[in-house]
Image (cartoon, rainbow, N blue to C red):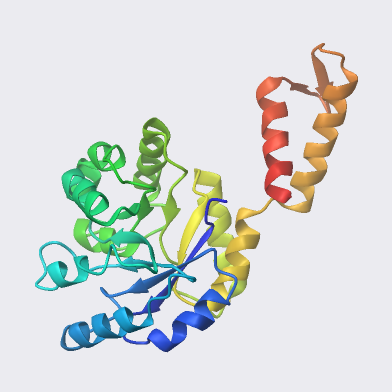
Length: 263
């Protein structure tokens, strides 16, 4: 199954890993980057090392290549208990391939800078790239854009297109900063889904359920899909109309995809 939810756990709070795994998130990311202050980087790395469990593998967000912690973080990436590598501020396809070759794990590059966007094709096609992720907050900062929706949507669509052309799963959208308002989280997720995303980064366990709901079809979507397939089945290969609209092959395939998501 392609992960819908990636839940961050601070690397300096490794006691939360077990709870995160039990939260229902499709994937757990132990974060050595933004969640850990500089003075605690080495302590957090040691804590992560002691917490790794091959029976319950987690993703690891390392610090970027230009930081003084990159080399030590990189040494953890191939250990048992690591499911994949999350690379922040990804700007170089060659680095992704190097990380993959050294660790034999997929890499989730986060596109969160103008340079990352400019090099998106090489990042998407790099050996080892498992899926693209969108770093909306840092991208806004890098480009000097004060707002998010819908100003960043053209950049989101670039990730969707690059993923399709590279044969990758649909990309992962950035975080919703509110975690106490499930309706807002679900609404953000439905917007992501409408743009072609099928995954989302999460910062709190309370976001998991609304994210999963947001990526699932609504009851009206499911009812529509059943009507389309019923109309198609009764058409005996002929063109058919449903509620004044033509039901052709792309419409049928969309209906099938909706029911597959519902199951």
